[in-house]
Image 1 (tube, rainbow, N blue to C red):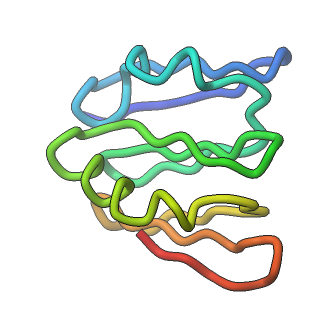
Image 2: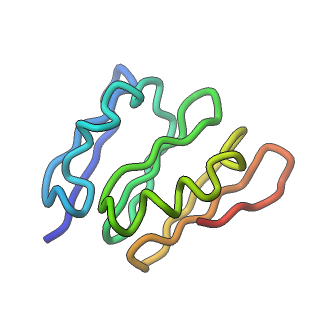
Length: 101
């Protein structure tokens, strides 16, 4: 019941698999341009764009509220790392600080 994502040569993203686990990114597809990195949890994905911003998608009930809560901190990201949990992610910002969500 998983989902998968791939960054294409043009910097866009294609997803497939269980929609409740992020296999359908149609709600954010227009934002997924110039993607630098994608990480996934069991039920969600996060992508860093070339400008350091983040786009998240996946299980709406679990993930959207969490991402929204730290939205203002999700700028100038250099790297993201997912956990084996349903929705937990961590990001390293340009200044070396870490934000978790």
